[in-house]
Image (cartoon, rainbow, N blue to C red; front, side, top):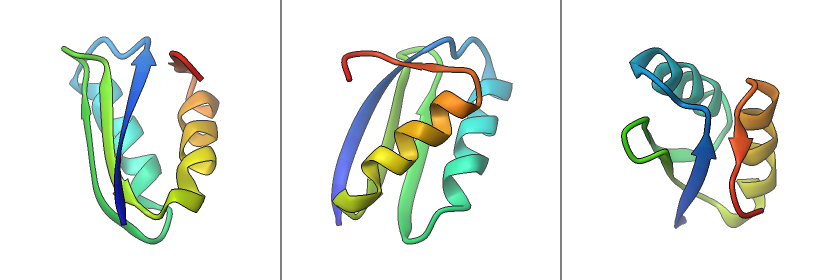
Length: 68
């Protein structure tokens, strides 16, 4: 398992955080997911192979990944 910090543009409230966290939790294996709209950072602990799937899921929710 590795920790990834993903910079996300468009998170503006706790509702945004919850949407992202709930969507990512549906993937397995996810050890931890924490979205913070104040910093625009989504922290995920998971296997490296899931990183592109996680980024795609965030973008499908209407958010933008910064620095892909």
